[in-house]
Length: 220
Ligand code: DX5
Ligand code: ZN
Image (cartoon, rainbow, N blue to C red; front, side):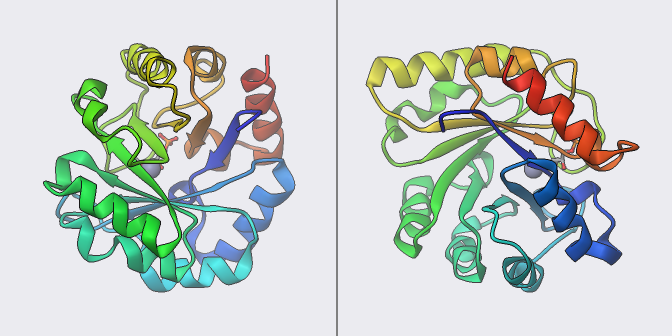
């Protein structure tokens, strides 16, 4: 993307008013909706599934970025595209058949992403370059919103940015977890193209002002 994208995470939204929360995102200037899908097995928490994604699809034209924190992602990845997801990402740690899963997402018409936990090195992706459209780097341990940013992810962003330059490929880099005013500018400078913000957006007194602040940092 030409300018960096902000993706508020619905995990921190009010689930009784999802339609209105989508409007808040749309009017804030944020460009993407991040949807955290958790199965209670890959991560301890259980959140959103296919029927909710179908409903979200009817309520917004913004791209839906579905982050699958589930075991056996191949079973469901294409279904999320069919339900209306534009981007679908699956955890490398959850999938021994990533190449196949990424191909299934693309075949269904989605952008295919690989998610790496904080402890998984970006170098584990070298033999998949070309098979994914984006990488989502976790800057917290997945499972919950509102955790603190793990600063070492900055170095992973830089290494991944170097990898794409080296290979002459154009996947994009997204960062998720503990993103806020203190790290947004550094992340973009390191090479991030999209930032997820849960609490920094929805738990702010004024989410629209928070988005303006974050986008200001991201475009510094
Ligand atoms: C964590 C989720 C994140 C979460 C981010 O498992 O993947 O997307 O919603 O929330 P914050 O920005 O509050 O860390
Ligand atoms: Zn997420």
